[in-house]
Length: 78
Image: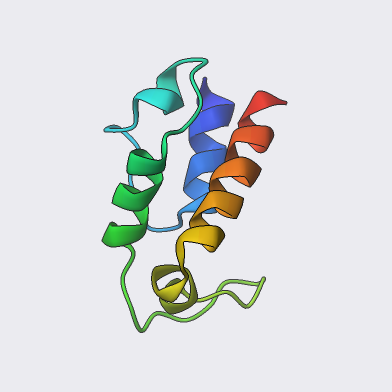
């Protein structure tokens, strides 16, 4: 459970996870939960070591969200 919360924090830097039911259970993250995290990301911040800034994630379309959702759920499953 702690590892899942840490992984979510890595995936959504700067976003707290207490509201995500998936962080405390074996359920997959839902698209609504992911969109909630994305909405709370702050624009104009420096990128992390991967070079991705919040603006890229916020401006991405539906396909990007579906890909991120798939990736995050695979990460949490392992």
